[in-house]
Image (cartoon, rainbow, N blue to C red; front, side, top):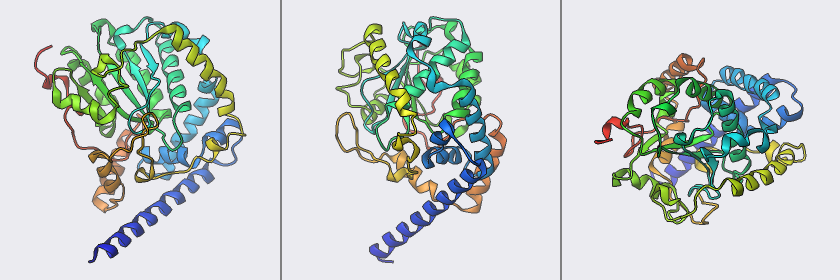
Length: 354
């Protein structure tokens, strides 16, 4: 087969797969029935696709999952949470959105569990939901995922809570599918290992493979930062060159300004929200909005593009079985399982020393 015919055949398969996906998006939309208000705004093609991806493109399961989210959003009203509602949770900088993006243009949430300052689990989850909505609000056009950068500085046993972890997982996995691009656990201590073993089963295998352990004294894992971030923008606390630190007054001002944008974001006049198109992973932009530099497609992304088109019976049967087993947990999932990179999905036990 010539190179030209091979490329034509590849494009043909991709086009056929895209049409199949769009057909399933249409079926979910029909199953949802007539929607109005914010529910109608929420259910763009891209949004519906995220639920289908989370359920391995099973229309019935995705519809069920999406209906639960629409009910949750109408009752919990995450888009109506404002800074003054959760500011007490934010004073220590335990979660904040950076003012820069990763090389793919994804919003970045820095999390410092060692800075936990409250005991109210519901309040902690509410603040996380606020941060998720804010990160989504600030995503550049064509990007729909974010990065979690979890710093274990100051972390101790008192910060561990399976209860809060479960509440968090229930909300994120059920109502924010396919929003997490990668979660980096930075300098996790040795005593975190038993907790990770207890908490990781709350996540699907595919989601666990989005978790990467990075250690400042292991250059092989630090390369993950260099691949993902512009090191001039990354804070010094993570080995970058940016000397800035969290300042609650400056951050409060940023968030209050963002709060003013939220009503218009959820307005019927926001055509960008309602008409957000479904893009296959290889159609999404890979240019960093923060540095304006074109980035190469990573090996894991290449595998995702390849595996998304793999519809052999063996692969489909395996993914359907996994979806059946884990549907009730409604865990946020990736399109495909990624193979381990240095530090990826590796338990802290693999690192010698504390």
